[in-house]
Amino acid sequence: MEIRDIERAAEILRPAKRVAVLTGAGISAESGVPTFRGPDGLWRRFRAEDLATPEAFADDPKLVWEWYDWRRGKIAGVAPNPGHTTLAKWERRFPSFTLITQNVDGLHVLAGSRHVLEIHGSLWRTRCSVCREVREDRRAPLAELPPLCFCEGLLRPDVVWFGETLPMEAWRMAETAAEESAVFLVVGTSSVVAPASSLGLVAARAGAHLFEINPEATPMAPLAEGVFRTSASIVLPEIARALGAG
Ligand code: OAD
Image (cartoon, rainbow, N blue to C red; front, side, top):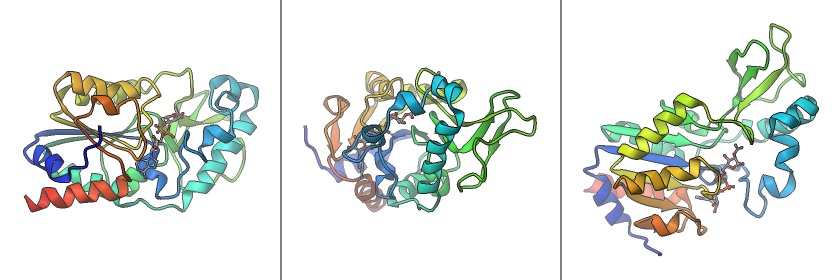
């Protein structure tokens, strides 16, 4: 299916009371954040099982931290793009708007979104593996690796690793938003990582209008009523303009 009908999407969105959006690495691609599965994707160059599992961290916390800190360094200076800023404005545009992201880059928050369900955590938070305290960090690389808590426990990135469960409260809210949304947008995700990949399906089964924004084909596309095969940083502002014009 190849539908590029901005007007139609805007018509459906305009009266919608409940809108939910799921974003993935693709929305940040044009800000300069690497995706995971593209030609230059992180998982093409690194093995997830060596760097993004609890076992890897137990084996070699410094190595795991070096990788996360390298990513922090890469992302620290990047800015949100018009895709992020459009979604930030939509928080005020719709009576109920839920932004769910798999991204750990913090760019939705930086763009001005106040309520973001970060279901895979954040690169800019640490969590103590002993006392469990969660701390917000500056958007900068760390001074010392691996970092230690005030309690002397080892800090870990507050992200979800393979084999771990998602933060319960955020996930529950994401599922509810998918079930209750009138319109659900799946933006910049390959839709291959469970359970996030199920949210579009949950929404479509519950009767939502499902749209996808992604330059590449994904398993979500056949379920969508509209597919925009171009960059989120272009399409989202276009839809916003069409919305405003109606
Ligand atoms: P992926 O790297 O799997 O997919 C990124 C998607 O973005 C691809 O489908 C691209 O086609 C699309 N894309 C690229 N540029 C785009 C643009 N300008 N506009 C819109 N879309 C674009 O990233 P995710 O789906 O986010 O999990 O990956 C899901 C999870 O897998 C991540 O959260 C991470 C990873 O392992 C954890 O670390 C737990």
